[in-house]
Length: 161
Length: 250
Image (cartoon, rainbow over all chains, first blue to last red; front, side):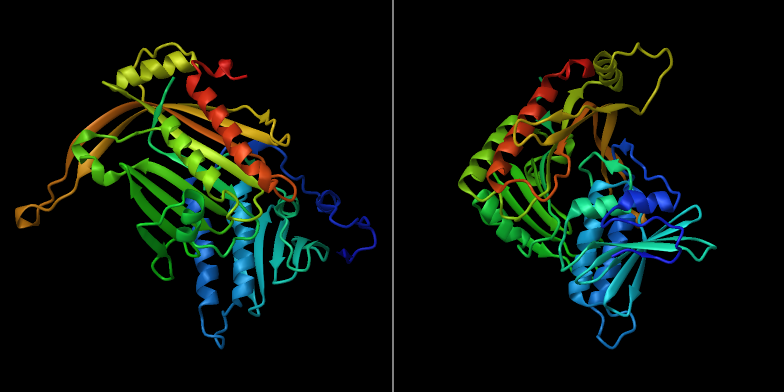
């Protein structure tokens, strides 16, 4: 279900990410490129390591992350790394049951929120009250195509890591 | 036709990483037990969640890695069967691929469950006597004139997509040419803790990296079509190895 806090914004159809990006005035990249740098691949590895470390912490620790969430977030990150040229996201742990991946692009902030059941995309315009969000997947489903549509990046055509 | 490569790689991409560990996957794919199996744990590894299996057989190393979102099977020359002074060890890609396909037919190429993308990669190499010879071959393939002044780091790559007859799945066909020099360096500490590093082998190569991979499909590739898709990808790979110029790729 879409959440829009401004009545002037377009009514979004379910999973209509193009409308969401149009609203945010951010053209999705549609070109393609062959591969990413080794350094970027290394940073993705660091993110996976951070996810795994958080899942191994004691439950009482502030940064503890439930293993089911950690595994699902690792799958999402793996799909993004394998198929897009997106820069490695920032990583936030929200109360141990949700992982937020975020990317900044000019005056736009993009969040992909992953928990054991749902994956949700939220786009915010920095310095404004406006935000827009859309459920990407529910009930623990994993459809790589929908995740790639949601994050909206250039395709990575090579099969390199 | 170029036949030798540093390695041959098969890759499976999946949305939900299966619980199968690399040693069990190796048994399912190749019908053979792993000689070594490692499951990486924090804090040591740079690639957590990864399990890795190794098997040595007939002068070849089989290395299977299962990590979030993908599994990769590499076939390389067994490093223990080659002297470092012999330079760069290579495998025959066709022979290695035929052997693996026979094993896949008797094994379970679908052991990772739902797969939305697959790939095969081979870094083909032609050993040369000098960097000038490697650059000459590069120039002939790419169709550029010789350089008047010495140059280095020659590289050219392109992607020509094609629709596979297997379920009409689109394939990226990425071919990259290069002319390079490789050095094997021996690192050792001599008397009085002095470093005694030296180049023990030097190789000049014309390289042609062939990466044939399917574009992500909606849902997943039909399990009964997976082996056929790999075989079609291999036909494309062999076609790329026969090219004399990028323009010949149909």
